[in-house]
Image 1: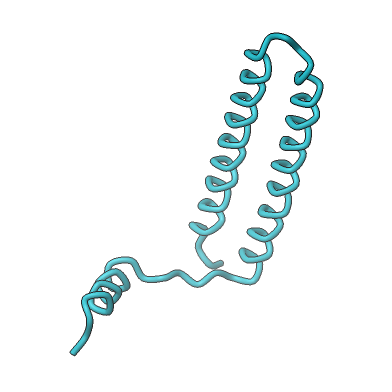
Image 2 (image 1 turned 45 degrees about the horizontal axis):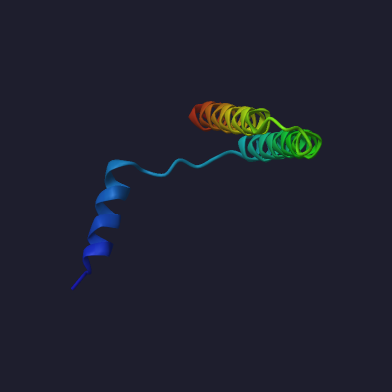
Length: 94
């Protein structure tokens, strides 16, 4: 007798079959991951440096604005990465 988990996984597999990626697609996905990981690290470093400088500023709202800007940039980069990855995955084998 199958568990509820096994039955759910079978139904999921039937409704959305896994697509096989080509070697080229895998390479491009890895390159994208690497590039965006570097971009995120660069943004993180820039934010930390600015927050260090703003630590002595008597106006705490400037630091909060910079933190919010960082979060927006991070979210934008992550969304951009996922969009590009989806486009690569959606390509048909040629």
